Amino acid sequence: MTGRRRTEDPLRDTWAIVPLSDGQYAEALAITSDLREWFTPTGLANLAKDLKFQVGVAAMRGERLVGFLCYYSEQGVGHIGWLAVNPGLHRQGIGRALVQHVIERLQHAGISEVRVETLGDAVAYEPYARTRAFYRALGFVDYQRITQDNPECEELLILRRAIP
Image (cartoon, rainbow, N blue to C red; front, side, top):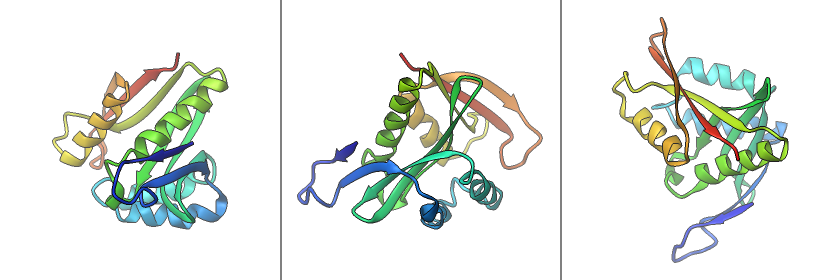
């Protein structure tokens, strides 16, 4: 899958979606370390562990990793574990393309629903307001809210999307 955003330099905004390889984990972690509004030190540590066990896809611009998404299936339901795009490339369709690619893969596997967990609306934090808006624009709807005793995520919001 490739994507292109209209610009004066069409090659600048062309990317390909490919499987995320073990050799790209350091690049993926480097992207997330530049996204401190979303990834706390605890989140980064968990991501480093999860990368080894979740399936990943990478958005590549030439030889450069510019975004990735990790996902898994549990009891026949798809789950997005982690999504990150280079902060200088937000709002160019890369995240959308990664999510759509994974939804297509899940659909081909016979999975009819995908879920994602994020910080809930009860926590007034603008970066996650953008995250919720992003997923909702892709057809995800609120599924469940869980109040937690976790200062990094006092309210967990689970969003879900049917896969036709």
